[in-house]
Amino acid sequence: MPKILYIEHNGKEHVVDADVGKSVMQNALENLVPGIIGDCGGACSCATCHGYIDPAWEGKAGSRNENEEMMLDGALRVEPNSRLTCQVIMTQELDGLVVRLPESQF
Image 1 (cartoon, rainbow, N blue to C red):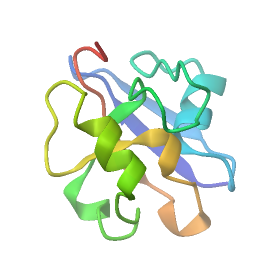
Image 2: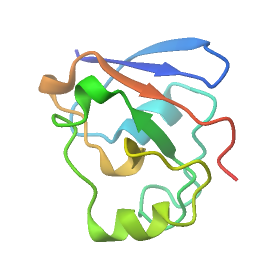
Image 3: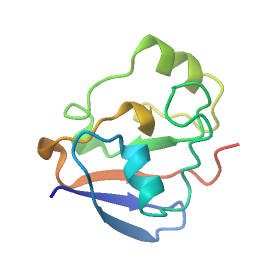
Image 4: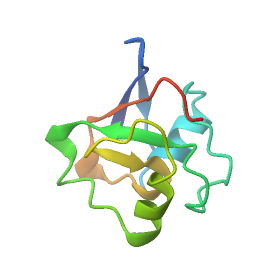
């Protein structure tokens, strides 16, 4: 089972056994990782699952689609490696993925 390392803005780490085929957001919510809200349930319509994909994983995690770009336009503290975690689907190849979480989703 692949793992995801979530790092809160304060440095606290959460390692999660991730389900392949579920989004990085779903895996966080199901494992009670603080910092990801996911108000829209993964429909790419709220940006409350914003996270920063570690630069080492950016290419493997795919790229933003047009809807994701539009949603990130309204998010706080967007960086080049910002993603909506509902749009990153977990695969075995993403075992060890590192996602840093913003201080706030609002």
